[in-house]
Length: 415
Ligand code: COA
Image (cartoon, rainbow, N blue to C red):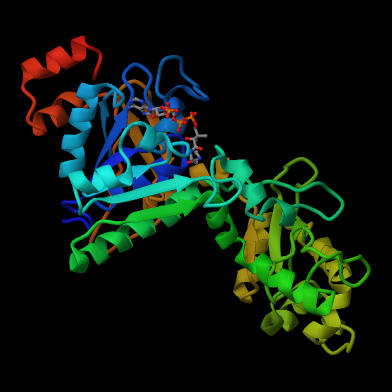
């Protein structure tokens, strides 16, 4: 089967998480992704959070599938010459260096255009133009500066970061879309362009509903679906909403059977208006169906937390899976709190290729998250991440270097 991005060549100058997420997706769509790393060390994540001595970490392997790796010292004149050949042959250069690093290497946008006017240069930076544009940025900095941390957690606690890597992987996803759009536009213009995704911007994009709420708060002074209503206090900025659903249908996380010993024996429960009667029947509160204090969403909102406490008396008598089975029969929206252990063992996720077992020559078998985007005409086969410099000889040969040239460059530590 052909792949959506067959024939597209990516010069992958990315490292750590944000950029590699982007190029891994492009590789899964069929692009030839050539990852350029420094000889001897490579992407810093190869050695970070190692669980097996001297073996590429899971951090690295899980972000760099389906790529080729070459080592090249791009600050050495001979290395620069090889990089120029690569720039001429590739369609896209993707990088997430600290601001200015590519320019300092001698590869400004102008220089890259001279070498290949059709090249798309895609970058991730922490911040866009402005006061913080020169800052180095990691995941949680972006979560804090993008509005996520101030709106996550509970009202009486500090700002909270989330485990979902919305700053790194989230920005990588945004950049991948920009690259694909630029490749499409190039079909008519014939030109490359710069594509930039700032981590602060990507996080804010994912927190769009909170900027919506900021403006609602400024207009009305309260937000009825927030847990601060009706008895708490609203300030002048969107407060932390705990586990409130954030949409028009109230929801909360409730304890299930076993919660005393199992930290994940919980369920997310949504009191969607059309199934309110069913909720009342399931939890044995049929008298609420016609009670004016409970019969309408507006009547329920001021007493939604006591309502959830009553529902919890019922959920505590069921395991999260038993509750799911019962509630789904009535179309009551709910979701079990799944641990990573449960997700890793879930057969349905294995069957769809969302969780994949991969074999690696030095690590052995490990689990990874496969391509979450499924396409009927461009399937994804996840192949292991490359060892450092595994494809140096192959790629250098493709660039026209002889085996003697390659041996000489290796002796000079250029590759
Ligand atoms: N050959 C020679 N030099 C190379 C090279 C190669 N193959 N690959 C990288 N380098 C050099 C760079 O040119 C740079 O040199 P310079 O500082 O002299 O200009 C240097 O290696 C280090 O790059 P840098 O990006 O500064 O790495 P860092 O480890 O200091 O910082 C980040 C890491 C992630 C903080 C930083 O890259 C960053 O802010 N990136 C943008 C935001 C981002 O993506 N953050 C999320 C990461 S998950």
